Image (cartoon, rainbow, N blue to C red):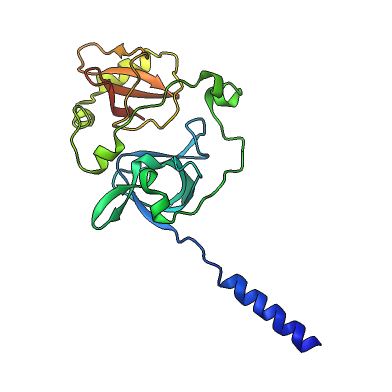
Length: 220
């Protein structure tokens, strides 16, 4: 009887080892992208993924909007609309194609790394409209008005003005990133002698092109 039990146990272990496991996916950030402690803008920033750097995607939420990734030795969560992977040599946004990529579905265990309004438990009540971004267009190499050139014109005077003239934060779902759009109902603040306005989104200051209301620079 013992040999039979051993054989059955071995068969069970073999079957377990043969179970299919979704492979990790390599992806590229289309812009400087926050790596957060959890899947949402209410979680603290652990690192910033540099534009065009690669990450390893361990899996994404069932909704597909946030993915758990590893970058430069740090594991955290990134907004998947700004992550692409090549398909037939063309960059494809993970958020729009998660089902076709066999991306693992993962869950997030709630922690205590929320910041700002979230730390006080009021983020849900304060959150407004989604940041309307253009990540697919950015991934495809399209040049959206005002997405480029801001960093080179961001002088010390502009940064100093923003720092010395704080405004109350606006909480929006989505991620603060170059290319994201600010909803029309949100007030922007002007910067003297500058082509850009500014605003505090999710406790991060950004410069915005007032003509199309897209973020052109995140002031870090």
